[in-house]
Length: 106
Image 1 (cartoon, rainbow, N blue to C red):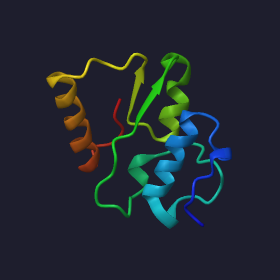
Image 2: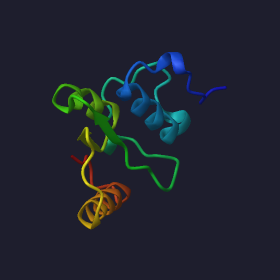
Image 3: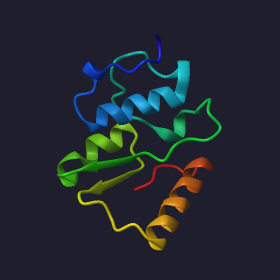
Image 4: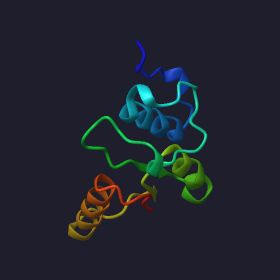
């Protein structure tokens, strides 16, 4: 199947993020096994509602650049931030900004 993700292609979290981005973009995405640098401003998703992609890593300083290039909107270290009203509001704002096309989030 064309949009099927094969586990053998997923070597790290950025590979998974890249695969999700390709699925969101549909047939217009590059057909190569890697999207070297994802530019959210230049690609339009065929899906009306895009997901907020959060990369989570034990070593966020080491992995952040690769996750951002793959299409992650936010990068979190482990343990993840405390879930509460402040985080919920930050995530909601980030998601709305993404869906309104306000560019890359950090």
